[in-house]
Image (tube, rainbow, N blue to C red):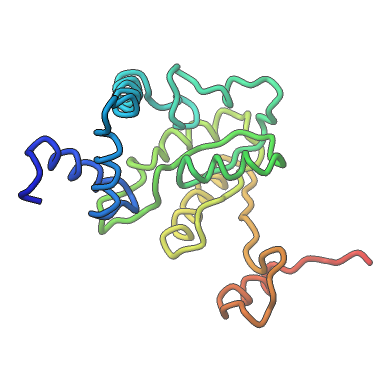
Length: 201
């Protein structure tokens, strides 16, 4: 990278901090942004400046927003008795894309990981517990990832729900729609067996 100017080197290094972006991809992005008119670079600059100065987190669900509360939490037609707890904003967007969930959310921005210094405070569990105790939420859907850390996080939140007298449920895991049994790993097939339900003929 010695052949680049310091400014270009700094841009490439900054782009490499993005998830999934390696050295060559970062270099291609930098060259794209530095094309003649540099309209894309200025547009990106303006967008980054705006999010850095105006985007925070929703007081209620912790999702990114520009006001005290986000649009989802302010929506009057959402089912306020149903709360889905997810690990990331991307998970929230995945649920919204289904068009089949009309409740509210709580975004953890991670999962419990003591070795990485991520405990209940970092996940906002105190705020979640207060929300459970205010009486509006009747059921919490535990939608953390099916990993060791995700399961541990779900167990802690389920305990908070029990303490507040709120029902909790866990997302079903198992056979994906359109999947074939012979290609599933043992853990997935085991979850499918454990989560089986009555079938109406």
